[in-house]
Amino acid sequence: MAHGSSTKRPNIVVFFTDQQRWDTTGVHGNPLDLTPNFDRLAARGTHLYNTFTCQPVCGPARSCMQTGEYATRTGCFRNDVPLPADRKPIAEYFNEAGYHTGYIGKWHLASTRVDPVPQELRGGYRYWLAADALEFTSDAYYTLVYDNDNKPVRLPGYRVDALTDAAVRYIDARRESSDPFFLYLSFLEPHHQNHRDDYPAPDGYEERYAGRWTPPDLQTPEGTAARHLGGYYGMVKRLDEALGRLVDCLRSCEMLEDTIILFASDHGCHFKTRNSEYKRSCHESSIRVPALLHGPGFMHGGRIEELVSLIDLPPTLLDAAGIDVPANMDGGSVHPLVQRRGEEWPKEVFIQISESQVGRAIRTDRWKYCVTAPEKDAWNDASSERYEEQYLYDLRADPYEQCNLIGVESFEEITSDLRTRLLERIEAAEGARPRIVPAPSRGAGQRTAEIARMD
Image (cartoon, rainbow, N blue to C red; front, top):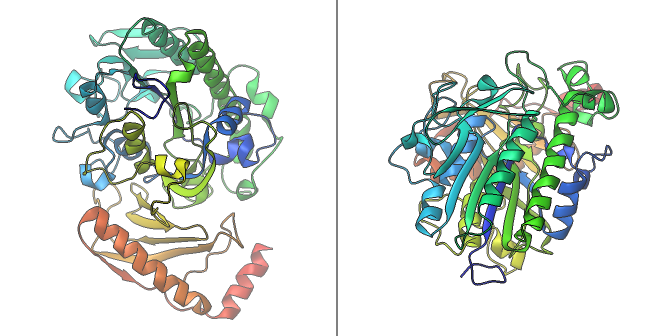
């Protein structure tokens, strides 16, 4: 039986955004009132305060959400790799449990780009209104997706509203059904519009937020934040309004109390301050995302401080629906955390990085430790037998990751422990234990000079 109050399994809606930083939300300290609906649901339900992607790039992160397995296990370690046919995606488990499954929006797991996604590459979803690379089939006020028969469908309105309208129609059509539904609603926003490299908010929204607040890690001449934050925030605002509309729809259809809402994003955005594009790094701005659970089993769960990975969300959804979690899934359900049942929970999250580098990282409650394989091809190589230490950050003393401590002699004991823990996580996820070459030693004088420059 599901964790909800009725004998019917709960409906589930996944509200999935693209490239949204955790600190766009009010409950994470953003002062611009961008997310009143997210903040309210987080307060009423369960706020997954420390949630991180396991792969800070679109396709790999989405593969983890659809399979519950790390991207190197499925082979989807970079973009343009379709979900493999030998993997059973999460929608199939819901199909077998009597759910009606639907997918609306961006897929990015078929490698068809602007062409329709054939049925065998749709991850088992029975209702389909989506595009593989929505960023290339659409624009802010031009939304083109494909239906179950692979016919093109133009949806009216700003793109966030167009997809939300489609989700409202889907939910309304399920109102009289005795079967529960599992709807995955996948937005492009607040991802940049690729062909223009900008962040197209609804008309009037960019002006509302431009120049008003810049997170400390983006207060630098480098990067594009000064040019793009207004539009980015405007997109986040419209997403939150869409979340409110979705909740209104569920309430008016008398489904809200029987529906679990999961809000998450695939990765964050550092606005080209850490490398030459917007993500694909180990930094908080790239890997930390907003997340919440609201509905049966998650009401009044409070703020969960434990570190949660995207890899934990598929087993969480299955568990919440009363479906057995398969042994091949790499994460664990967060439901025991909500119930405070005292189960052991990992003390770190594990991150794989591709396309910008072949990298691996762990993030604990205090430390960030990252290694890289500079001799490997970041596009073609999924992993390496040898890594070099790249970053060590003390997130308690340096939450915006301005001072890299890797190689500093006084931190060698901490580095050694993190090195061992990362090797264990790599071996568990990838089946092989590589070698990590320690960074050249640096003295305290070098660190003092770095801190002076940082100040």
